[in-house]
Image (cartoon, rainbow, N blue to C red; front, side, top):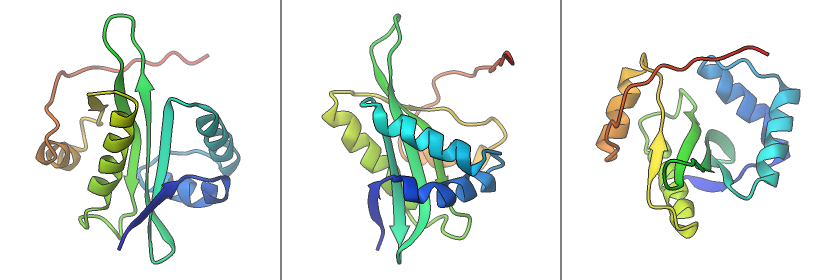
Length: 142
């Protein structure tokens, strides 16, 4: 059985470890700072999936506000431990986010996915997500 609960500061190490599985290089101190910021934001959502008292996944989402379109909910990050994949955990995390989004009167959930993660594209499509557009992302280092 999978349980879901809000992310807490005590979860920082597990969140950082899971993030590293997908190649994200964030320190424990930075992870703690991110958790604090998310907890203060009423338009942010962050939960863990727990099985047998062990963190096996997390999802962070938020309400995106744009001038040119109506607000939507966006999955900012979703990671399931490599030893727990293909067991419905990601789907459960998404359903929790969808429920939260509906409670905020949001009727669309968006997710962005790296072009090289083709197996993840198939996963989202099986859940009913429809590819909307292809983008390039540009960063400016400050």
